[in-house]
Amino acid sequence: MRVPAHFVPELGGAFGFSESELAANAEGRMTGKQRLRLLANGFWYWLFLAFIAVMTAAVAIRTAMVLANGFGPVVVLLVGILLLFALALGLVWRWALRSAAEARTEAPARYEGSVSVLELEADNPRGVGSYLSHYLDCGVIRFAISYKAYRIMEDRQRWRIFYSPRSRRVLSIEPLFSFDPARAREQHPPTSYASAIAVFLFGLVLMVIGLAIGLAVGLTDTLVATFIVVGALFALVGAPLYALGIRWGISK
Image 1 (cartoon, rainbow, N blue to C red):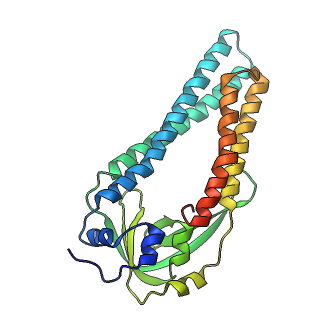
Image 2 (tube, rainbow, N blue to C red):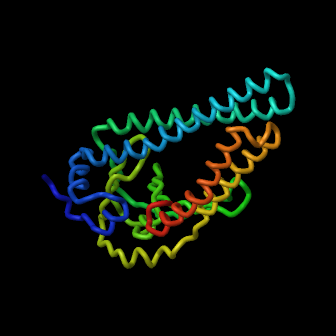
């Protein structure tokens, strides 16, 4: 087996690959562990899909029950929420199928050439704060990376990148120059926790939706309780975990 001469432990830790995985990718193969990681990434799509399906069914049943008592503003509200859930269901279903197909891919794709390391700020669609996202820009293709990987990459240098063809996730990477991790970190100062704040705000939005439905159909409704509980989990559990992920270099 050919072992690439440019395996760097710091890069392996930041991107989550080993020396043997880099060697396999260089030979045109994905390892079993890499396929499992791709499948695990898709697991969250299927979990989210199940959640949306349950919520869609709950809203549909509640809509039918309210409609049986006559048409009114509450029905319009519930139908609007039902349509949004149906749209989300279709999108997540498409992502889940694509992720499952990718796990069966035999060979990784490869890019070799100059790479720009980007940190882009975008306004929060909810109007509060902003997102900081990190990318490797290769001109014809762009890879989303974690904050930890962003800190370890040197800008405008030549790299060899092995990635999954469909989702364009970086599987492994090696430098084609004299790489210095300390020099790379000097290029990229620490970032903020804006994304974790956005997760917290998303949880609050879910809770507000639950309360709005509650005011319309009664606070004893199971659907209302579901929105409030899920929103609380996002705000009180999801946001702190996401912040820890940023701190540890797992989240973007």
